Length: 358
Image (cartoon, rainbow, N blue to C red; front, side, top):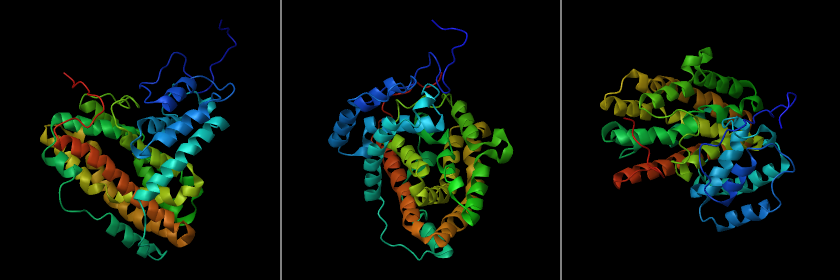
């Protein structure tokens, strides 16, 4: 029986449940354990469960169980899911599980994001390399499809996929701020200040995106659509989190952010056009319109003053800066290929359908 002196551990919400379902034995175990305060750590058979899952997966980037499991563990550090008990964040048994899955994930990302054409570790040379890497390409793509062809249902699916990262926009990259000094630190703070509204809570980019989500009749509660999105969408966010949370991957998170900012402005113009085509006003398009202007500035800062300056100041980090940039594009391509391929084949890109608002 509760007494007046009992308290609920920080981060533990009595009666709260996670808003999604497990996708396999690892995520099922974690969803059962992480909503209660730590007692003796994870169950004794955890190592066997995780080992089997890693041995049996043929592609960790598309593995539903392992990607959801990593998402849950990272959510402890973000505080993005209130039902998870905060006492687990630094629990050694949980960190050991996370590290095993991360090693497999990092190896998979390095295989698809190999860098063989490194420039000199100089600010302008690195910036040129990044601008060449992220230059727009001709031909069909997600942004063109959204602008010209996407149905209203597909536009809602597009937003659902983006809720995984964009309702937490900028957070994964902010882990890098205390690890930088000098020019790169100043550049990252300048970019992130804009992302967080430059002191105005109404202009925080995640909040503006939440307004877009509500404007098309969707739920802006974080995690509301995890059941609907495929593993590759969760993996995209997990890789950002992995880069951001590990100090040894500082170069990778900076390269990732540089590529992210340098491929944002033009697509966001097309995304805004797609929603305008269906009659939506500025309450829905503000998020995309904001990024057309903001990211045209951010891409210059990110390429030269952030990534380029970091490579010049700390040449040992340059291989990972380039790797992070390639990883950003490779994962975006995999995610885009899934969504666009599904639409062009005439079916939903979601794992489960979402009822359209009345």
